[in-house]
Image 1: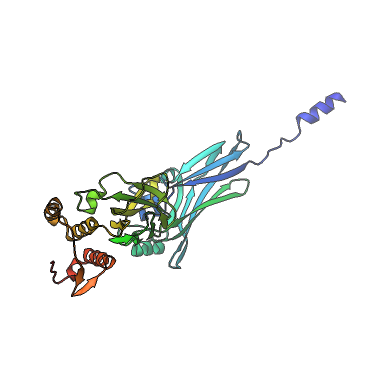
Image 2 (image 1 turned 90 degrees about the vertical axis):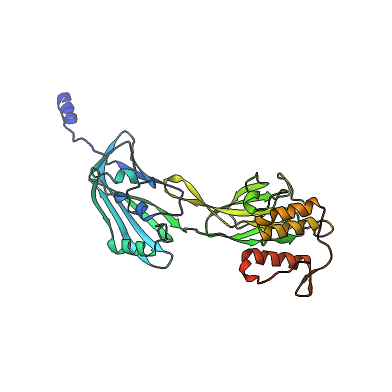
Length: 343
């Protein structure tokens, strides 16, 4: 009896438990892509864009299957391109953990099927930016691991492209005189992050580029489109002085790097406690007329000359703010001024 029991135990059928595969993904922090990034198998300048991790539970076990990757594109224009890119691997084995990147998927030894929809590719090329950037839209990647004997695990990730290309400074306007020492800066930008920098114009600096070659009073990143100059933890702006500011858009590109889109340079002045100081008017005139007049203004300052009397345009008296706005318009479009007489 005991022998029969032992034999029956020895010949029980072995139990095989199916292993579960989990999918996790990591993507580069990008909001721009090139056509080469999307057509990653054929890219001549491949960069890291995403990582796929396949993990077997429990980690001591092994699973085999086929990895599939599908890209669905929904452009901001409303156009849709389902399965614009499709990739399918040869059977692969996962023991514990297996990590693959878009760079690995380009290997012929790993690839069984790959296609880039030619209609979608032609459309992307037609609407690509001059730098070859993919058009703005929602790019959704579906990741599947189809096990040979245990169903399919599904994961995925998406990238939203904005391709920010320009920044418009809104306030303070170029040449504006502001009464507050804590102005609010505003700009227009369709990217996710911006970096604002503010510099003090020092004596002898006639061009904006000269001003920003120094150390900024303020340089900080923000996710908003406005920023108030702080009242603490940075050097205060001073009445009667001129400052130059600009904004850089922080743009994420493939390979995990960043590039900057810079706005034009713009200046503003802080009104003196008793109004606009005469030295500020000289500074504004010098900036408007350009560096070729720098020796003239240096001589005026050394001789002690200052603006005096009433500002007039075509016989009409001008207020200082009106005068500053005219200088700003002149800097933006010098060709609009046909003649100028200074008395």
